Image (cartoon, rainbow, N blue to C red):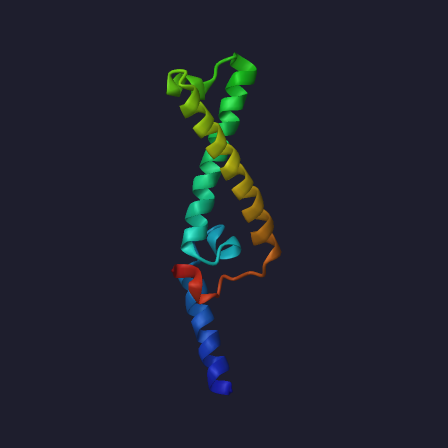
Amino acid sequence: MTNYLTLRASEEKKHHQSHAGSTMGSVLFCAKWEEVFYYICLAFVLLGGINWGLVGFADWNLVEAITAKNKIAQRVIYALVGALTLAVLIMTIVFAARPNCASDKTRDE
């Protein structure tokens, strides 16, 4: 039992040292794919917010300009931004509710 605890403490110390520079990854995410997916979703949410800001302040729609007024492409982009916004909301709630998993071995997968 003592050997297991000593080994576990040593592994945790190495893990924390190897992830010392990580800001959010060591707190919110257990796996690298979670962190990557979260930041991709967050980028779409920010672009959607910027687009709505441009619509509100300058009466200029970035999505419309990019898609050359192709209604199907616009609907796809709006649906993608909406779905990824929900994903960010759900991930934020789930990640905040679960315990810190920085020492979990799945972090680097």
